[in-house]
Image 1 (spheres, rainbow, N blue to C red):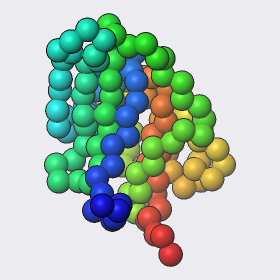
Image 2: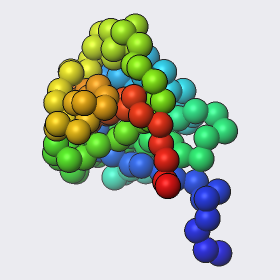
Image 3: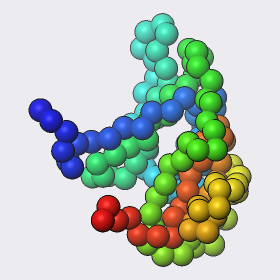
Image 4: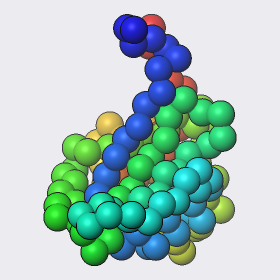
Length: 134
């Protein structure tokens, strides 16, 4: 079956500290924990899937004692959410209290949004623009 606009998307990332990452993405940003799993066999990871119920995407974070890869985000590794309006100061405060660090994402995103590094260093951009593929 070919991919389509209805194809579900999973973005998977390793995490050194799943509890800290979940605080940022769930308590800070407001995503729901859609699934949480513990390893059932040697070599498996602890797993948390976050997103919004009914959305066509989710963020998967994996880690724990079996983690063999370190998170290696760089400044160009962005997760962008298009809010179509200003970023509320209460959300900025919540993200900072949940372990996020405000960062620069470059001149374009600094003009059109607010960027944070999560506890593993991955970047979230809250864009004030509306998404358009025109």
